Amino acid sequence: MNRRHFLHTGAAAAGLLILKPRAAFGYQANSTVRLGLLGCGGRGTTVATSFAKNTSAQVVALADLFPDQLAAGRETFNQINASLGQTPIADKLLFRGPHAFEQLAASREIDLMQISTPPFFHVEHLAAAVASGKHVYCEKPVGIDVKQAKAALGIAQHVRSNQSVDVGFQCRNAPPIAAIAERIRAGALGKIAAVTGYYYASASNEKKSAGPSADEARLRNWLWDRALSGDILVEQNIHIIDLCNWLLAAHPLKATASGGRNVLTHAGDCWDNYQVDFTYPGDIHLSFSSTQFGDYKVFDAGLRLFGANGYATVPYAGPVEITGSSAWAWQESMNTAPGSGAFAANGAFSDNLAFADREKERTFIDSITSGNAHNQIAAGVETALSCMLGRMAGYTRHEVTWDDLLAHGETYELGMSLGQFA
Ligand SMILES: NC(=O)c1ccc[n+]([C@@H]2O[C@H](COP(=O)([O-])OP(=O)(O)OC[C@H]3O[C@@H](n4cnc5c(N)ncnc54)[C@H](O)[C@@H]3O)[C@@H](O)[C@H]2O)c1
Image (cartoon, rainbow, N blue to C red; front, side):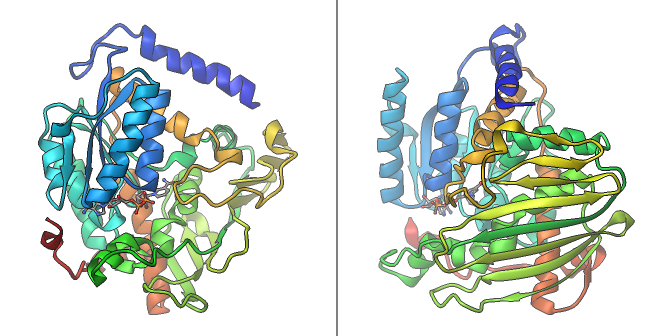
């Protein structure tokens, strides 16, 4: 399959938004889904912009802990709304401070809450959003520790049948990845024996003048803080672990791991490298390695799955193909080089992921307007726990089983009160 064919079928799918006659959860098909964005940073802006440009959603409300972020978000979305012939964000739909998430959730003027805050807050924000009855798009990870993950499973039970909740694993929706996944699941590789995975990135920039207090600096540099982010395995490498779980239709049963903070010297306590051996059912091993430091100008992430009849290469950039008796390739990827994609802190990647966000957002809005609601919380938790398994094995230097992990009750503390930012 090539991109043109996918675009054709994708356009047909998008057409359902216009053609489906029935109303769901108060929406007439083709009516506007009013979106409120919580967390007006890099990723939040990218995803909400994609919703605005690629779907029937309109950004009508914004919320953020910090006033400068809220003001920047307002300026951005007023421009985007103007370019789309839509109204600016109303003053009454701007929410600031530690209770902004509750005010956004309580608003009767939004239908969909997009949660794009740092990972530590996702589950608390998800609880408020789900309780409000609104549709929810929540960034990964769904929880940064076992306690949060279990709480999220409880929240999943309260999702109403006409309420749609998605988790931000957009890589599954990237056309080349969706296409190769279909073939792998249909058995193109034969019996899968082993998987390798990798995520090699340069360091993200540290925000040096991040605020007047140590707490504010921590919050603005959340990426490098274990409690706020979950560490690189849980926060970023999670996309690759998610693809592996999805392709194997399973989660790892145990893990051993090593790694550390060997190069990074700036603030924070996240590791800068991991090497994890995950064991999946059937004694299939995922050998995963990750680095995040330096300024290599290289970003390389992906999976290779080795089966009895062939192997599949599933990279962010470079050829997406199956080699072996059921050989196949995503033609437009064949002249690109592995590792040629640029790291994008806002998740707006090029190459094989170029249309991942657009397809993810369209599929989600279609789940709302068609009445075929999603509830992706449990799947999101399963992947988050898989990453926590590797992280715990790394920190303890012991093999950790899935049951050990669940019994552990791991709990991270924020160590500050957000009341100071009221
Ligand atoms: N799916 C992807 O590919 C992808 C890519 C990048 C980031 N992400 C995820 O998106 C989320 C946001 O990442 P980012 O890069 O946009 O970070 P960011 O720092 O650019 O933005 C976070 C925003 O949240 C606000 N915020 C912080 N704490 C808050 C609170 N308690 N209440 C309300 N607002 C609060 C901050 O002021 C900031 O505006 C993270 O969970 C991250 O893991 C996903």
